[in-house]
Structures are given as structure tokens and as C-alpha cells.
Length: 128
Image (cartoon, rainbow, N blue to C red; front, side):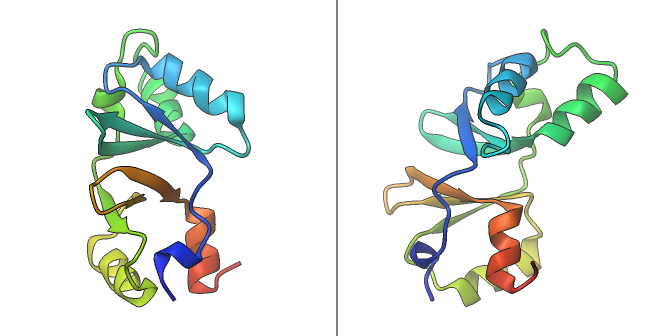
């Protein structure tokens, strides 16, 4: 089975690294529960991922201003980029090795094609 055989085309939005954390939260919540994350992208290149719990930890627990903080400051940079033609078994090995917080699907030119969410990953590995 290849990455292209699994669902990965939903559950995310794209944000600029300079977008405020508040704007990221608003964009995620506009599409919630279908949208669960923001992929931070600069010049077409995925740089990191932000989940709502990241925003809560930063803004509520960490008492940082969501209106002043930028996506670049809170994004999780531990992402794995895979192509849609990669074998799922190879991706499983990479995930086990790197333990990424986000799996971004890209095409041969590096453009984002999708996002394998934690929910998608649970289905892929057989945990429901």
C-alpha cells in the first residue's frame, strides 16, 4: 500500500509563519472538527504544524498573547515529509524513528498535497 491509497487530503489549513496565533486558531476553528491543524508554510515549503492544544498551551497555560505571538514561534518543527508514492511500510519505519508531530504529504516538486492526521495514522496502523 502506498501513501496515495490512504486519506490525507483534509483536516488542515495553511498559514503563513507570520500569522498571529489568534488568526491560526480562528482559521482552525472555522473548519473544526473537520480541520484539526494548521500547516505553517513559507514560500510553498512546509515548516511546521500547529494543533489547537499547542495554541492552548502557549496562550492559556503559558500566558502569551495570541494576538501578538506568531505561528513561527509556536509551530512544532518535528514534521515528516513523505511523497504520495512512498510505501506505507517505509513511512511506518520513518515515523517510528523520528516520532514526528505531523506527517505532510508532498509531491515530487515538494508542494503540499495533504496531511496525515493522527486520526488517519491510527487507521493506517490499525488502532481505532
